[in-house]
Length: 309
Image 1 (cartoon, one colour):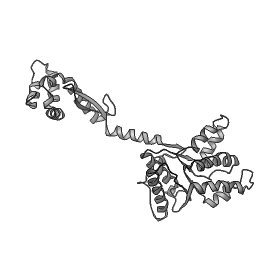
Image 2 (cartoon, rainbow, N blue to C red):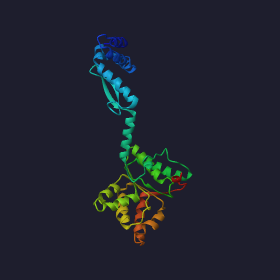
Image 3 (cartoon, helix red, strand yellow):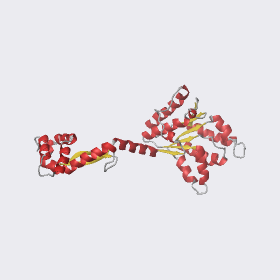
Image 4 (cartoon, rainbow, N blue to C red):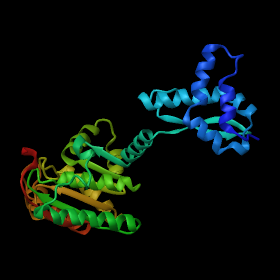
């Protein structure tokens, strides 16, 4: 066993039989603080012969560590070397860097937020960056309460929110922030811009993929329908798309959210009641509203339009 680590390292640094270039290279390695500290920490398990036999690993450690710290472009991109003991010799393991861990977490989180036609700033939204004032506090607190309740008891039914308000008051951003916070805790959310989704569904008729896309939405653990009512009224979208989604989610008691520029009353009378032929169908609209009211709590958001800032 080694009695004096530093003395052994000094002896190895001054071996005359080594060629000059290799000797200079290894002097740097054996005097490296990480190497010295590791050898001192494990002096009971290392012999001078073991350190000498581990020269290649020690050189690799110093080289790859320095490259990783300088530009991150070592032989194992995204990973940094650490020294370990293996059968009384010094070896190297590569572990993820802090940056790699953060990127992996971000990737895992992004997989839990499924979005269709949602702007980049919404996909990166967070509760911390949400602008709060008196006109937005109620919506924020209810979204936060849902987050607390859902993460505490995800297996029971929790009502979502029906966020109504004028353009640019932060409805979509708040929903994006909620989706990301849920993803941070391992819960998947599907968030779709409803007018864009309806156009996609119309285009899917020819490829016979309507059912597949519809099923993905109606069975999502948490669903956010953004900007409902912004498109033109259409009985097929109302009855065979929105109606099917809401019916399934009510029966299965799945958390559902809607954002709209219309209040619930306006949605019923101005959007859901009128078909593409401008015919009024109040009973069909009322049936849909029953499902919306079962699934969601209405919350009005007011304030200035942040899109104009």
